[in-house]
Image (cartoon, rainbow, N blue to C red; front, top):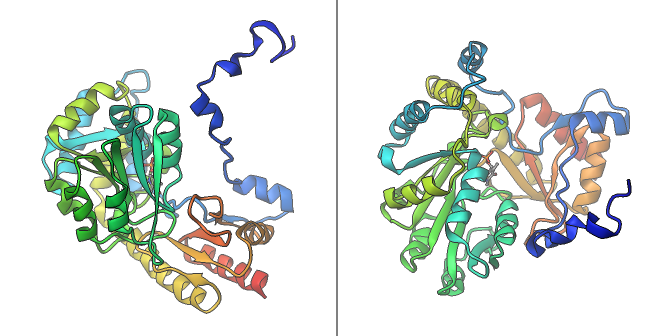
Length: 367
Ligand SMILES: *Cc1c(COP(=O)(O)O)cnc(C)c1O
């Protein structure tokens, strides 16, 4: 049977126009693909900001005994995790939601707020999924260029806000640039409007500063995740803190079972071993410092408060990334991120030997 021919076969024409307009998603290359393509035995991936040490051994222990595969997750489990998050952050339980990663939480929050033609303010460059979600909802994205050091320009952000603005996205530390935002700059934005200020703190554990004090405002949501410092990226679990009334609306919109019991148990177990998380973070920070000083002489590298470094090399990013791949190192080409230069590259901080391989390969490419 011919697909996409005449008659009723053109289902793709029924797709929403917003969806058709979004460029196709191209995932990064996997270690296996790169090994095959270049005939390499050793390949390291420093492209997705994962914790290279994985989760605490306590997580593996708990999951070994898991036996409730056939039962939907129970509200009790969410309550227990919520209690732990509440202790960890020092915030009230009735302000906390748990979701399928920050990505899943963002999706729910966009469903709560963004009607077609509503405006979403995105300081650029930032996390690409913000643009995707705005497009999916039929919202209008209002992009605001960051300053030279990639801090947000709060005056320009405030100027960009209209009656139509529903969400303002603040990512701190920012992906892909690694800088944190000044709390008073964000406070000025929050106080200037009634729009929702969504603060994405996916990398908070790696940073000396955070924006938690802004939770005193009813129009602020702060989101965190177990994907990065806690080493649970594959389990899809994150959380956010918001005003209790917003939480009520969130619960109406969320899918009924956004996270699995496996993910919840793993998250609870990792809270029981925060020393482990801390030791991973310390090792990553030490390596971040080492890579930064090694890069300083060769490329334009920016200070980072996250588990990755952003730099601009004297070579186009697509060429550089390909050359590094040929040498067994996968990093992220950021040249297609909205608001990035053609020279933009992001490298995750891995284990010491992985980072050394990256530095060696880079030296080799740049000669
Ligand atoms: C990795 C990342 C996310 C996604 O986190 P999940 O909790 O795995 O969905 C969200 N925001 C930023 C800025 C990220 O870098």
